[in-house]
Amino acid sequence: MHLTAPAPGRTDTRPRTPVRTRTRDADGMAVASFILGLLGLLVLNLFLGPTAIVLAVAALWRGTGRPGRAYLGLTLGIADLVVLVTVMEISGTVSWSL
Image (cartoon, rainbow, N blue to C red; front, side, top):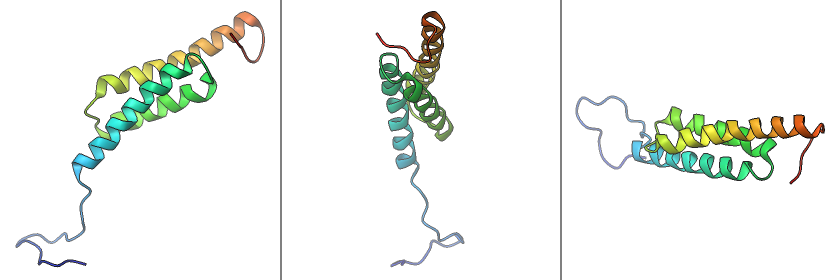
Protein backbone atom coordinates (compact mmCIF):
# COMPACT_ATOMS: atom_id res chain seq x y z
CA MET A 1 0.00 0.00 0.00
CA HIS A 2 1.53 3.28 -1.14
CA LEU A 3 0.41 6.55 0.37
CA THR A 4 2.33 8.64 -2.13
CA ALA A 5 2.69 8.49 -5.87
CA PRO A 6 5.93 7.12 -7.30
CA ALA A 7 8.56 9.62 -8.40
CA PRO A 8 8.31 10.75 -12.02
CA GLY A 9 10.20 8.44 -14.35
CA ARG A 10 10.30 5.59 -11.87
CA THR A 11 8.40 2.56 -13.08
CA ASP A 12 9.52 0.08 -10.44
CA THR A 13 7.23 0.52 -7.43
CA ARG A 14 8.43 -2.51 -5.50
CA PRO A 15 9.96 -1.73 -2.13
CA ARG A 16 13.70 -2.15 -2.24
CA THR A 17 15.75 -3.90 0.40
CA PRO A 18 17.91 -1.24 2.00
CA VAL A 19 21.61 -1.78 1.41
CA ARG A 20 22.32 -0.83 5.00
CA THR A 21 20.23 -3.72 6.37
CA ARG A 22 21.82 -6.17 3.97
CA THR A 23 25.32 -5.02 4.95
CA ARG A 24 24.44 -5.22 8.65
CA ASP A 25 23.23 -8.80 8.18
CA ALA A 26 26.45 -9.65 6.35
CA ASP A 27 28.48 -8.06 9.15
CA GLY A 28 26.66 -10.24 11.67
CA MET A 29 27.42 -13.31 9.60
CA ALA A 30 31.11 -12.37 9.48
CA VAL A 31 31.27 -11.97 13.25
CA ALA A 32 29.33 -15.21 13.82
CA SER A 33 31.68 -17.13 11.52
CA PHE A 34 34.68 -15.79 13.43
CA ILE A 35 33.21 -16.75 16.82
CA LEU A 36 32.08 -20.19 15.66
CA GLY A 37 35.49 -20.80 14.10
CA LEU A 38 37.19 -19.99 17.40
CA LEU A 39 34.82 -22.19 19.39
CA GLY A 40 35.22 -24.97 16.85
CA LEU A 41 38.91 -25.26 17.64
CA LEU A 42 37.94 -26.49 21.10
CA VAL A 43 34.57 -28.26 20.83
CA LEU A 44 32.24 -29.64 18.17
CA ASN A 45 34.60 -28.84 15.31
CA LEU A 46 32.79 -31.29 13.03
CA PHE A 47 29.70 -29.04 13.15
CA LEU A 48 31.09 -25.59 13.94
CA GLY A 49 33.84 -25.68 11.29
CA PRO A 50 31.54 -26.11 8.28
CA THR A 51 29.05 -23.65 9.79
CA ALA A 52 31.79 -21.03 10.11
CA ILE A 53 32.84 -21.66 6.51
CA VAL A 54 29.29 -21.28 5.18
CA LEU A 55 28.65 -18.09 7.17
CA ALA A 56 31.96 -16.56 6.06
CA VAL A 57 31.30 -17.28 2.39
CA ALA A 58 27.74 -15.90 2.69
CA ALA A 59 29.04 -12.75 4.39
CA LEU A 60 31.65 -12.19 1.67
CA TRP A 61 29.08 -12.83 -1.05
CA ARG A 62 26.69 -10.28 0.47
CA GLY A 63 29.40 -7.65 0.66
CA THR A 64 30.21 -7.38 4.34
CA GLY A 65 31.81 -4.27 5.74
CA ARG A 66 34.12 -6.56 7.74
CA PRO A 67 35.86 -8.72 5.15
CA GLY A 68 38.83 -9.34 7.46
CA ARG A 69 36.57 -10.88 10.08
CA ALA A 70 34.89 -13.02 7.41
CA TYR A 71 38.25 -14.24 6.10
CA LEU A 72 39.34 -15.06 9.65
CA GLY A 73 36.12 -17.03 10.15
CA LEU A 74 36.75 -18.87 6.89
CA THR A 75 40.32 -19.67 7.90
CA LEU A 76 39.31 -20.80 11.38
CA GLY A 77 36.53 -22.99 9.95
CA ILE A 78 39.04 -24.70 7.68
CA ALA A 79 41.47 -25.00 10.60
CA ASP A 80 38.72 -26.69 12.64
CA LEU A 81 38.42 -29.42 10.05
CA VAL A 82 42.20 -29.77 9.71
CA VAL A 83 42.57 -30.12 13.49
CA LEU A 84 39.80 -32.73 13.54
CA VAL A 85 41.39 -34.80 10.78
CA THR A 86 44.88 -34.51 12.28
CA VAL A 87 43.85 -35.53 15.78
CA MET A 88 41.72 -38.37 14.43
CA GLU A 89 44.69 -39.69 12.47
CA ILE A 90 47.05 -39.41 15.45
CA SER A 91 44.67 -41.09 17.89
CA GLY A 92 43.41 -43.65 15.38
CA THR A 93 39.76 -43.10 16.32
CA VAL A 94 36.71 -41.62 14.66
CA SER A 95 36.41 -38.88 17.29
CA TRP A 96 38.71 -37.14 19.70
CA SER A 97 38.64 -35.58 23.14
CA LEU A 98 41.03 -33.48 25.18
